[in-house]
Amino acid sequence: MNFEFAPMEGVTGYIYRRTHARFFPGVPRYYAPFIAPDGQGRFKLGSLRDVLPENNEGLSLVPQILCSSAAAFLSVAQELAALGYDEVNLNAGCPSATVVPKHKGAGMLSDPDELDAFLREVFSRAPVKISVKTRLGLESGEEFPRLMEVYRRYPLSRLIIHARPRSGFYKSEPELATFAGAFEEGAPFPISYNGDIFCPADLHRVSEAAPGLEEIMLGRGAAANPALFRVLTGGAALEKEELREFHAALVSGMKDAGISEHHILSRMKELWFYMLHMFPGSVREAKALNKARAMPDYLSAVSALFSSGYFDPNAVFIPPK
Ligand SMILES: Cc1cc2nc3c(=O)[nH]c(=O)nc-3n(C[C@H](O)[C@H](O)[C@H](O)COP(=O)(O)O)c2cc1C
Image (cartoon, rainbow, N blue to C red):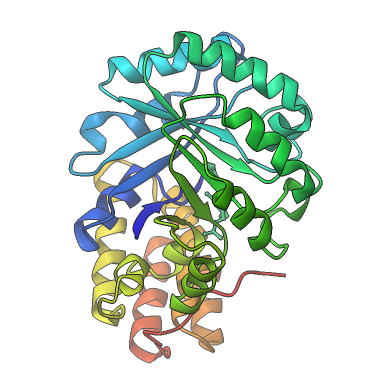
C-alpha cells in the first residue's frame, strides 16, 4: 500500500510538512494546499512561498491548483515547472460555497462537458504531468460514472477520489460501493482512495471493498495522529514524547520563519482541533489551550496537557457530525 498526505489548507503548510517528514519519515508524497490564481494566473505570495523548493527540502511534493480557467491553470503550471516540479494536481473537490458557484473545485463536476473541455485544453499544452483530486459528483455519487468516462480520456498521472459528493462536505458516509465500482472497472492511470481512514480497521474496510487498491490518501486522520502512516503499515503507535517534540519543532519552525505569535497561535489551534483527539477526555486542558491568547499562556497550556492530560496512543480521530 502507498500512502500520500492530503492537502489541508491552513493545516499542512510547508513548515508542517517539513517537520512531519523529519519526525515521521517515509511518506512518499505530500500535496500542497491549493494555489488559487485569478483569471490572469496571478496568485498570492504566501502560496508561492509554500511551494518554493527551498522550503520543501527532503520531501516529495505535488503542488495543487484550484481554478476554472485552463489558461490560468497552464500559466501557474508553467511557473511550477520553472521551479522544478514535474507534476501538478487539479483540485476538483473543494466544497466551499465561495468556489463551487464559480465552477471551481467540486464546482468543476457540475458539467462533465465543461470539465472535458478544460482537461482537453490543459492536456494539449501541459508542461508537466497532471493528477486530479476529485469527488464523486456535486449532488450525488450517481454522477460519478459519467465523470469517470471523462477522466478516462486523459493521461492523468493519478486520480485521487474523495469518495463523497460535494453535498456530503466532510460529513456524509464515504460511498465505498461507488468508489469500488469505478476502481474495478479500471482506468489507464493509478487510482487513489481518500476519505475517513482514521485507523487500521477503516483501511481494512476500504481494502476489502476494493481488492487490489494500492494508493491511499490520508488527511484528517494524519493531522490528528501524525504517526498514522506508520501505524497503518504495521509500525509502532504514536508516543507522547514524539508528539511533544513534534509540537515543539513546529512552533520553533514557525518562529524561525518569522511568523507572528498571533498567527502561530491560530495555526496551532487549528492543528490541535485534530491532535486533541490523542488526549480523549482531557476537556479542562483542551479548554485552557484554546483559550490562550499569548504565547506564554499557550505554551503552559500545552505543557499541562502533556503532563496531566490523558494521552491514548491508540486514540482515533472522530469527525464532527
Ligand atoms: C481543513 C481542511 C483543509 C483542506 N484543504 C484542502 C485543499 O487545499 N485541497 C484539497 O484538495 N483538499 C483539501 N481538503 C480535503 C482533504 O484533502 C481530504 O480530501 C478530506 O479531508 C477527506 O480526507 P480525510 O477523511 O482523510 O480527511 C481539506 C480538508 C480540510 C478538513
